[in-house]
Length: 332
Image (tube, rainbow, N blue to C red; front, side):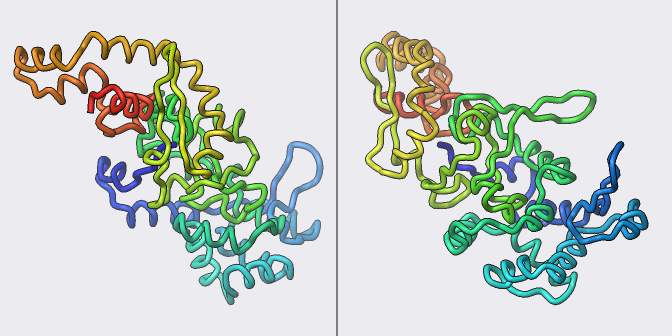
């Protein structure tokens, strides 16, 4: 529901996009992964499917390697992987080119991701690709902190549930999950891609979206994302509100994320907002402005929240709802 304004968030912490992207990609590519998994019980595991013999597994049980080495070895030894990469990307001849391609995939822009997904269609990434681009193993500790420091406060999908950061034992921690806009089960090659990761609450990510495809609307990272303009909350009788749109893609988003169903639970917040407006009429706001010496816009933002001016709606729970109702009730 909310566009991700990455540049704005980066400016707040003194970074630019190029530096952030480079740091993100290099943190993944410079990390060395264990080649062999050593379980407490049972035989040693060829972790990346490199085709190691029992003797090689034992010899390499303490060995580590960067993704470019692992990727190039899988590419060289697996015709299915090689065919997939050559067809949808381009051939690689050595580990240096493998690293460059890995970085290219990790930093695909939202538009490039969309085009690649369209090109790939329904073809699932080869299983060994999933082992290289594996979000869940060693990589989460390198990915999550990058998003944590950006300060996402409310779920991008529902704009209801807080995903605030907190500090414990000297470390910043987060309550959000990272959803894969393009499902990692189908497109595992994009599992580590920066612009395929959407900060979301567990309710939207796990309970509602889960593994369903909901890509019929734009990626929230995309410059083309304009859901806020094309879908508006409208006030209904008995202090209810409904998100409506004439855009079929927005309608699909509203349907698939059960937006109107979950917003039915916010009857009290809507009632409070409307009743407050009934008390603080335009005349009352002018009087408060004159009495305090503050501009009327500041008085309104203090009473109803800054989100009524479409400012920081992604940082406030129900920010879009308040922005839309504020306009409908004549506050803006």
